[in-house]
Image 1 (cartoon, one colour):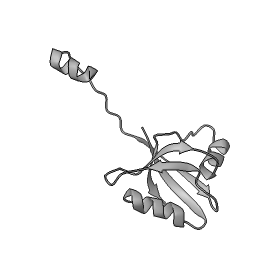
Image 2 (cartoon, rainbow, N blue to C red):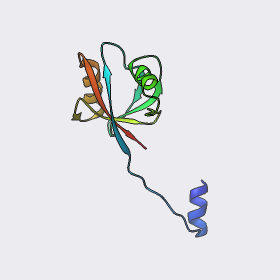
Image 3 (cartoon, rainbow, N blue to C red):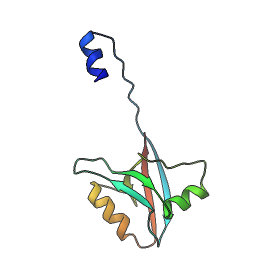
Image 4 (tube, rainbow, N blue to C red):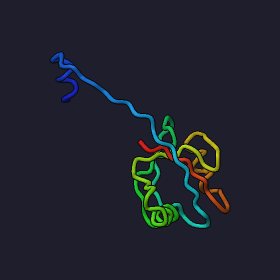
Amino acid sequence: ADLAKSIDSGEQISFTFQHPLETQITLAKPGDIGADLQYSATSVGLMISDIHDGLLKKWMQANPGKPVRRGDRIIAVNGVFGIPADLLKLIEDAPKRLVITLAHY
């Protein structure tokens, strides 16, 4: 609503666009990733909507200088980029380890 008012009033509006920072993390399985993941058919990757007990939380405790946050996106699993449903299947089916590429905005 505020944006629409600004546009209607002729105010100058500026936007800043930022490319995501990509990073890789490695999680040793077995175990649950410990994250709620959301996506739609047109999503880029799997969005991390919540982090709870599991492999991801253990990794974060061992790597406090490299936080994974809600809103980060999993864009590749074990080197494979793909649609969200395929990434989710790769996470579930990986037998020993997950190399996850994250995009942080």
